[in-house]
Image 1: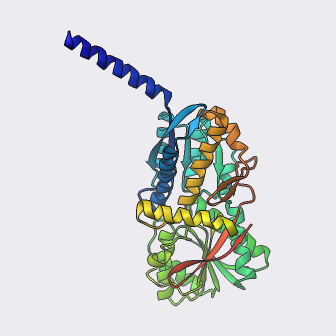
Image 2 (image 1 turned 45 degrees about the vertical axis):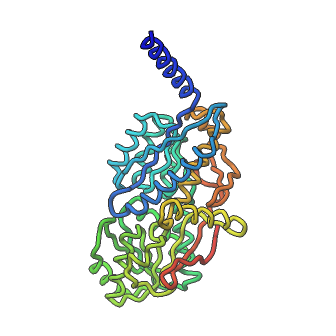
Image 3 (image 1 turned 45 degrees about the horizontal axis):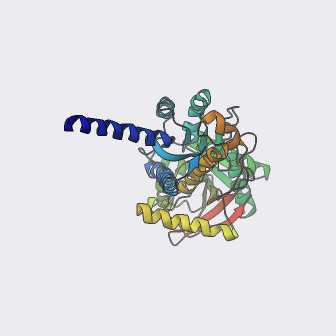
Length: 380
Protein backbone atom coordinates (compact mmCIF):
# COMPACT_ATOMS: atom_id res chain seq x y z
CA UNK A 1 0.00 0.00 0.00
CA UNK A 2 2.84 2.38 0.92
CA UNK A 3 4.62 1.58 -2.35
CA UNK A 4 1.46 2.29 -4.36
CA UNK A 5 0.99 5.62 -2.54
CA UNK A 6 4.59 6.63 -3.29
CA UNK A 7 4.16 5.76 -6.94
CA UNK A 8 0.97 7.85 -7.12
CA UNK A 9 2.68 10.81 -5.43
CA UNK A 10 5.64 10.48 -7.80
CA UNK A 11 3.35 10.39 -10.83
CA UNK A 12 1.46 13.43 -9.56
CA UNK A 13 4.71 15.29 -9.00
CA UNK A 14 5.84 14.46 -12.51
CA UNK A 15 2.51 15.57 -13.90
CA UNK A 16 2.59 18.78 -11.85
CA UNK A 17 6.20 19.45 -12.87
CA UNK A 18 5.28 18.93 -16.49
CA UNK A 19 2.36 21.36 -16.16
CA UNK A 20 4.59 24.05 -14.65
CA UNK A 21 7.16 23.49 -17.39
CA UNK A 22 4.48 23.83 -20.04
CA UNK A 23 3.57 27.25 -18.66
CA UNK A 24 7.10 28.51 -19.29
CA UNK A 25 8.00 29.63 -22.80
CA UNK A 26 11.41 28.42 -23.91
CA UNK A 27 12.96 30.94 -26.30
CA UNK A 28 16.12 29.82 -28.11
CA UNK A 29 18.40 32.57 -29.37
CA UNK A 30 21.28 31.55 -31.62
CA UNK A 31 24.58 33.40 -31.67
CA UNK A 32 27.35 32.87 -34.21
CA UNK A 33 30.83 34.38 -34.16
CA UNK A 34 34.46 33.35 -34.68
CA UNK A 35 35.39 32.00 -31.24
CA UNK A 36 38.37 30.24 -32.82
CA UNK A 37 40.88 31.54 -35.33
CA UNK A 38 42.78 34.82 -35.65
CA UNK A 39 40.01 37.05 -34.29
CA UNK A 40 38.72 34.67 -31.62
CA UNK A 41 39.02 37.46 -29.04
CA UNK A 42 36.41 39.46 -30.95
CA UNK A 43 34.16 36.43 -31.39
CA UNK A 44 34.29 35.73 -27.65
CA UNK A 45 33.57 39.40 -26.96
CA UNK A 46 30.43 39.10 -29.09
CA UNK A 47 29.35 35.92 -27.37
CA UNK A 48 29.86 37.54 -23.97
CA UNK A 49 27.58 40.39 -25.03
CA UNK A 50 24.89 37.86 -25.90
CA UNK A 51 25.30 35.96 -22.62
CA UNK A 52 25.05 39.19 -20.67
CA UNK A 53 21.75 40.07 -22.37
CA UNK A 54 20.35 36.54 -21.88
CA UNK A 55 21.25 36.47 -18.18
CA UNK A 56 19.66 39.88 -17.57
CA UNK A 57 16.48 38.95 -19.44
CA UNK A 58 16.11 35.76 -17.41
CA UNK A 59 16.69 37.69 -14.17
CA UNK A 60 13.96 40.20 -15.12
CA UNK A 61 11.34 37.51 -15.70
CA UNK A 62 10.19 38.71 -19.13
CA UNK A 63 6.74 37.60 -20.25
CA UNK A 64 5.73 37.03 -23.87
CA UNK A 65 2.07 36.51 -24.71
CA UNK A 66 1.23 36.03 -21.03
CA UNK A 67 3.88 33.35 -20.50
CA UNK A 68 7.09 33.69 -18.53
CA UNK A 69 9.94 33.34 -21.00
CA UNK A 70 13.09 31.36 -20.30
CA UNK A 71 15.82 32.39 -22.73
CA UNK A 72 18.49 29.95 -23.87
CA UNK A 73 21.61 30.88 -25.83
CA UNK A 74 22.77 28.47 -28.53
CA UNK A 75 26.30 29.62 -29.36
CA UNK A 76 28.12 28.45 -32.47
CA UNK A 77 31.64 29.08 -33.77
CA UNK A 78 32.06 29.92 -37.47
CA UNK A 79 35.84 30.65 -37.24
CA UNK A 80 35.27 33.50 -39.69
CA UNK A 81 34.96 30.92 -42.47
CA UNK A 82 31.99 31.05 -44.90
CA UNK A 83 31.62 27.26 -45.13
CA UNK A 84 31.71 26.82 -41.36
CA UNK A 85 29.34 29.78 -41.10
CA UNK A 86 26.69 28.17 -43.29
CA UNK A 87 27.08 24.89 -41.38
CA UNK A 88 26.57 26.75 -38.10
CA UNK A 89 23.51 28.50 -39.55
CA UNK A 90 21.96 25.21 -40.65
CA UNK A 91 22.61 23.72 -37.21
CA UNK A 92 20.72 26.59 -35.57
CA UNK A 93 17.85 26.25 -38.03
CA UNK A 94 17.67 22.52 -37.29
CA UNK A 95 17.62 23.38 -33.56
CA UNK A 96 14.55 25.53 -34.24
CA UNK A 97 15.93 28.73 -32.79
CA UNK A 98 13.54 31.66 -32.49
CA UNK A 99 16.10 34.12 -33.81
CA UNK A 100 19.81 34.61 -34.49
CA UNK A 101 22.28 37.29 -33.43
CA UNK A 102 25.27 37.24 -35.78
CA UNK A 103 27.39 36.64 -37.59
CA UNK A 104 30.32 38.89 -36.76
CA UNK A 105 31.96 38.91 -40.22
CA UNK A 106 30.27 40.03 -43.43
CA UNK A 107 31.92 37.08 -45.17
CA UNK A 108 29.96 34.63 -43.03
CA UNK A 109 26.80 36.70 -42.48
CA UNK A 110 26.10 37.06 -46.20
CA UNK A 111 25.99 33.33 -47.14
CA UNK A 112 24.30 32.40 -43.84
CA UNK A 113 21.55 34.98 -44.40
CA UNK A 114 19.97 32.88 -47.18
CA UNK A 115 19.69 29.89 -44.84
CA UNK A 116 17.91 31.98 -42.20
CA UNK A 117 15.69 33.59 -44.85
CA UNK A 118 14.65 30.22 -46.27
CA UNK A 119 13.74 29.10 -42.74
CA UNK A 120 11.96 32.39 -41.94
CA UNK A 121 14.22 33.10 -38.96
CA UNK A 122 15.13 36.74 -38.14
CA UNK A 123 18.86 37.51 -38.06
CA UNK A 124 20.41 40.67 -36.61
CA UNK A 125 24.11 41.18 -37.22
CA UNK A 126 25.87 43.36 -34.65
CA UNK A 127 28.90 44.02 -36.83
CA UNK A 128 28.56 43.01 -40.51
CA UNK A 129 29.06 46.17 -42.55
CA UNK A 130 29.25 44.99 -46.18
CA UNK A 131 26.31 46.63 -48.03
CA UNK A 132 25.39 43.36 -49.75
CA UNK A 133 24.20 41.84 -46.47
CA UNK A 134 20.94 43.81 -46.48
CA UNK A 135 20.64 44.23 -50.24
CA UNK A 136 19.81 40.66 -51.22
CA UNK A 137 16.07 41.04 -50.68
CA UNK A 138 16.06 38.88 -47.55
CA UNK A 139 13.51 40.43 -45.22
CA UNK A 140 14.88 38.47 -42.27
CA UNK A 141 18.27 40.27 -42.27
CA UNK A 142 18.95 43.31 -40.09
CA UNK A 143 22.00 45.10 -38.69
CA UNK A 144 22.54 47.58 -35.85
CA UNK A 145 25.65 49.24 -37.33
CA UNK A 146 26.25 51.57 -40.27
CA UNK A 147 27.48 49.91 -43.48
CA UNK A 148 30.78 50.22 -45.37
CA UNK A 149 29.46 52.95 -47.67
CA UNK A 150 29.12 55.18 -44.62
CA UNK A 151 32.17 53.81 -42.77
CA UNK A 152 34.68 53.82 -45.65
CA UNK A 153 33.32 57.04 -47.13
CA UNK A 154 33.61 58.92 -43.83
CA UNK A 155 37.20 57.74 -43.30
CA UNK A 156 38.13 58.65 -46.87
CA UNK A 157 36.86 62.18 -46.48
CA UNK A 158 38.59 62.47 -43.09
CA UNK A 159 41.90 61.37 -44.65
CA UNK A 160 41.76 64.30 -47.08
CA UNK A 161 39.94 67.00 -45.10
CA UNK A 162 41.46 66.51 -41.64
CA UNK A 163 44.68 64.56 -42.14
CA UNK A 164 45.50 66.55 -45.29
CA UNK A 165 46.45 63.41 -47.20
CA UNK A 166 47.96 64.14 -50.61
CA UNK A 167 49.07 60.63 -51.61
CA UNK A 168 47.16 57.70 -50.19
CA UNK A 169 47.83 53.94 -50.26
CA UNK A 170 45.26 51.21 -49.63
CA UNK A 171 45.69 47.62 -48.42
CA UNK A 172 42.91 45.09 -47.89
CA UNK A 173 42.71 41.49 -46.68
CA UNK A 174 40.43 40.26 -49.52
CA UNK A 175 37.55 39.42 -47.16
CA UNK A 176 34.04 40.72 -47.86
CA UNK A 177 34.51 43.21 -45.05
CA UNK A 178 38.09 44.27 -45.73
CA UNK A 179 37.73 44.71 -49.47
CA UNK A 180 34.34 46.38 -49.12
CA UNK A 181 35.41 49.06 -46.66
CA UNK A 182 38.66 49.66 -48.58
CA UNK A 183 36.75 50.14 -51.84
CA UNK A 184 34.46 52.73 -50.24
CA UNK A 185 37.45 54.51 -48.68
CA UNK A 186 39.18 54.66 -52.07
CA UNK A 187 36.05 56.04 -53.78
CA UNK A 188 35.77 58.84 -51.23
CA UNK A 189 39.46 59.77 -51.53
CA UNK A 190 39.29 59.88 -55.34
CA UNK A 191 36.10 61.95 -55.18
CA UNK A 192 38.13 64.55 -53.28
CA UNK A 193 40.64 64.67 -56.12
CA UNK A 194 43.42 62.88 -54.24
CA UNK A 195 45.49 60.18 -55.92
CA UNK A 196 45.67 56.57 -54.74
CA UNK A 197 49.38 55.82 -55.16
CA UNK A 198 49.11 52.10 -54.47
CA UNK A 199 46.58 49.31 -53.80
CA UNK A 200 47.93 46.15 -52.22
CA UNK A 201 46.36 42.91 -51.01
CA UNK A 202 47.08 40.49 -48.19
CA UNK A 203 45.22 37.70 -46.35
CA UNK A 204 43.35 37.77 -43.06
CA UNK A 205 45.79 35.14 -41.74
CA UNK A 206 49.00 36.84 -42.97
CA UNK A 207 51.84 37.83 -40.64
CA UNK A 208 54.54 39.09 -43.03
CA UNK A 209 53.88 42.31 -44.94
CA UNK A 210 57.47 43.28 -45.80
CA UNK A 211 57.03 42.98 -49.57
CA UNK A 212 53.87 45.07 -49.88
CA UNK A 213 55.05 47.67 -47.35
CA UNK A 214 58.42 48.04 -49.10
CA UNK A 215 56.59 48.51 -52.39
CA UNK A 216 54.34 51.17 -50.87
CA UNK A 217 57.22 52.97 -49.15
CA UNK A 218 58.80 53.62 -52.55
CA UNK A 219 55.59 55.44 -53.58
CA UNK A 220 55.84 57.81 -50.60
CA UNK A 221 52.28 57.82 -49.27
CA UNK A 222 51.35 60.08 -46.37
CA UNK A 223 48.33 57.94 -45.41
CA UNK A 224 47.95 54.14 -45.47
CA UNK A 225 44.46 52.65 -45.12
CA UNK A 226 43.99 49.00 -44.15
CA UNK A 227 40.73 47.14 -44.71
CA UNK A 228 40.86 44.21 -42.31
CA UNK A 229 41.01 43.19 -38.67
CA UNK A 230 43.17 44.02 -35.65
CA UNK A 231 45.02 40.68 -35.65
CA UNK A 232 46.62 41.69 -38.97
CA UNK A 233 46.81 45.45 -38.31
CA UNK A 234 48.96 45.00 -35.20
CA UNK A 235 51.84 43.13 -36.88
CA UNK A 236 51.54 45.40 -39.91
CA UNK A 237 52.09 48.48 -37.73
CA UNK A 238 55.17 46.82 -36.16
CA UNK A 239 56.66 46.13 -39.59
CA UNK A 240 55.85 49.64 -40.81
CA UNK A 241 57.92 51.04 -37.94
CA UNK A 242 60.77 48.62 -38.68
CA UNK A 243 60.81 49.79 -42.32
CA UNK A 244 60.68 53.46 -41.36
CA UNK A 245 57.28 53.95 -42.97
CA UNK A 246 56.22 56.84 -40.73
CA UNK A 247 52.73 57.72 -42.00
CA UNK A 248 49.16 58.03 -40.76
CA UNK A 249 47.45 54.64 -40.56
CA UNK A 250 43.70 54.31 -40.94
CA UNK A 251 41.15 51.53 -40.73
CA UNK A 252 37.54 50.65 -39.98
CA UNK A 253 35.95 49.08 -36.93
CA UNK A 254 37.89 45.85 -37.50
CA UNK A 255 41.11 47.45 -36.24
CA UNK A 256 39.49 49.90 -33.79
CA UNK A 257 39.90 47.75 -30.69
CA UNK A 258 41.20 48.30 -27.19
CA UNK A 259 44.02 45.81 -27.71
CA UNK A 260 45.45 47.27 -30.95
CA UNK A 261 48.33 48.92 -29.02
CA UNK A 262 49.37 45.58 -27.50
CA UNK A 263 48.97 43.78 -30.84
CA UNK A 264 51.31 46.35 -32.38
CA UNK A 265 53.80 45.79 -29.55
CA UNK A 266 53.93 49.47 -28.69
CA UNK A 267 54.97 50.55 -32.19
CA UNK A 268 52.16 53.09 -32.62
CA UNK A 269 52.99 56.77 -32.25
CA UNK A 270 50.44 58.97 -30.49
CA UNK A 271 47.80 60.06 -32.99
CA UNK A 272 49.24 57.91 -35.79
CA UNK A 273 46.22 55.63 -36.06
CA UNK A 274 42.76 56.91 -36.93
CA UNK A 275 39.90 54.42 -37.06
CA UNK A 276 36.12 54.41 -36.98
CA UNK A 277 33.68 52.24 -35.10
CA UNK A 278 30.12 51.87 -36.33
CA UNK A 279 27.73 53.38 -33.81
CA UNK A 280 28.10 56.40 -31.62
CA UNK A 281 26.69 58.04 -28.51
CA UNK A 282 26.79 61.58 -27.24
CA UNK A 283 25.70 63.55 -24.20
CA UNK A 284 23.35 61.80 -21.78
CA UNK A 285 23.61 58.50 -23.68
CA UNK A 286 27.22 58.07 -22.55
CA UNK A 287 26.07 57.06 -19.06
CA UNK A 288 24.43 53.90 -20.41
CA UNK A 289 27.52 52.83 -22.31
CA UNK A 290 29.76 53.56 -19.32
CA UNK A 291 27.54 51.36 -17.17
CA UNK A 292 27.63 48.59 -19.76
CA UNK A 293 31.43 48.63 -19.84
CA UNK A 294 31.57 48.46 -16.03
CA UNK A 295 28.97 45.68 -15.80
CA UNK A 296 30.76 43.70 -18.52
CA UNK A 297 34.10 43.89 -16.72
CA UNK A 298 32.49 42.91 -13.43
CA UNK A 299 30.80 39.90 -15.04
CA UNK A 300 33.64 38.59 -17.22
CA UNK A 301 36.75 40.09 -15.61
CA UNK A 302 37.97 41.60 -18.89
CA UNK A 303 37.46 44.78 -20.87
CA UNK A 304 35.02 45.10 -23.78
CA UNK A 305 36.92 44.53 -27.01
CA UNK A 306 34.61 45.98 -29.65
CA UNK A 307 31.18 44.68 -30.60
CA UNK A 308 29.78 43.31 -27.31
CA UNK A 309 27.51 46.36 -26.74
CA UNK A 310 26.04 45.96 -30.24
CA UNK A 311 25.35 42.27 -29.64
CA UNK A 312 23.70 43.18 -26.34
CA UNK A 313 21.48 45.76 -28.05
CA UNK A 314 20.68 43.48 -31.00
CA UNK A 315 19.48 40.69 -28.72
CA UNK A 316 17.38 43.06 -26.62
CA UNK A 317 15.84 44.63 -29.73
CA UNK A 318 14.85 41.15 -30.94
CA UNK A 319 13.25 40.25 -27.60
CA UNK A 320 11.49 43.63 -27.45
CA UNK A 321 9.83 42.77 -30.77
CA UNK A 322 8.74 39.39 -29.37
CA UNK A 323 7.20 41.10 -26.34
CA UNK A 324 5.34 43.63 -28.52
CA UNK A 325 4.12 40.88 -30.85
CA UNK A 326 3.06 38.69 -27.94
CA UNK A 327 4.88 35.79 -29.57
CA UNK A 328 8.37 34.37 -30.02
CA UNK A 329 7.34 32.65 -33.24
CA UNK A 330 9.50 34.12 -36.03
CA UNK A 331 6.63 34.67 -38.45
CA UNK A 332 4.66 36.60 -35.83
CA UNK A 333 7.34 38.88 -34.40
CA UNK A 334 9.31 39.49 -37.64
CA UNK A 335 6.91 42.22 -38.91
CA UNK A 336 7.18 43.97 -35.52
CA UNK A 337 10.97 43.71 -35.56
CA UNK A 338 11.07 45.27 -39.03
CA UNK A 339 9.15 48.29 -37.73
CA UNK A 340 11.54 48.88 -34.80
CA UNK A 341 11.93 52.61 -34.25
CA UNK A 342 13.25 54.74 -31.40
CA UNK A 343 14.62 51.83 -29.34
CA UNK A 344 16.99 53.29 -26.74
CA UNK A 345 20.02 51.01 -26.57
CA UNK A 346 23.44 51.40 -24.97
CA UNK A 347 24.90 52.02 -28.44
CA UNK A 348 22.35 54.69 -29.33
CA UNK A 349 18.84 54.89 -30.76
CA UNK A 350 17.93 51.94 -32.98
CA UNK A 351 15.41 51.82 -35.81
CA UNK A 352 15.44 49.90 -39.11
CA UNK A 353 14.76 51.11 -42.64
CA UNK A 354 13.01 49.04 -45.31
CA UNK A 355 16.23 47.17 -46.14
CA UNK A 356 16.95 46.22 -42.52
CA UNK A 357 19.73 48.79 -42.12
CA UNK A 358 19.94 50.98 -39.04
CA UNK A 359 18.44 54.42 -39.61
CA UNK A 360 20.69 57.47 -39.26
CA UNK A 361 23.64 55.26 -38.33
CA UNK A 362 26.40 56.99 -36.42
CA UNK A 363 30.15 56.48 -36.54
CA UNK A 364 32.68 57.23 -33.84
CA UNK A 365 36.18 58.27 -34.88
CA UNK A 366 39.06 57.31 -32.60
CA UNK A 367 42.80 57.64 -32.30
CA UNK A 368 45.29 56.22 -29.78
CA UNK A 369 47.43 58.11 -27.29
CA UNK A 370 49.59 56.63 -24.57
CA UNK A 371 48.41 53.14 -25.53
CA UNK A 372 44.75 54.06 -24.93
CA UNK A 373 41.92 54.56 -27.39
CA UNK A 374 40.67 58.14 -27.42
CA UNK A 375 37.48 59.44 -29.04
CA UNK A 376 37.81 62.14 -31.69
CA UNK A 377 34.21 62.73 -32.73
CA UNK A 378 30.80 61.19 -33.45
CA UNK A 379 29.63 61.70 -37.04
CA UNK A 380 26.46 60.78 -38.93
